[in-house]
Length: 120
Image (cartoon, rainbow, N blue to C red; front, side):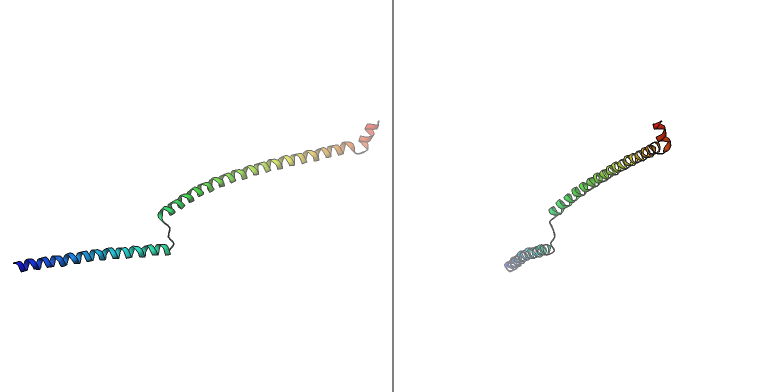
């Protein structure tokens, strides 16, 4: 019976050693894979998630600001158009008024009838 006990003890020791070896091998493989993946990430120039999220947030804020500025520019352009239209209409009204007064002044001040009436 002692020989069979001893056989089982030897088998248990061998199995235990094999398991510890496999465990160490597994850790070694995981370490190597992790190192390789990290090297690939660096070579591919990938960014960490935190940086990506920060840049995405900055982009969203910049987009909102750009939209606000576009609205302001549109409002200012409308104001400029309105001011230009008002200036054109007041300028054309002045030209019309000046032209009308010239015509009237020219008709009253010229010709023999008007000079004869004032001399007489």
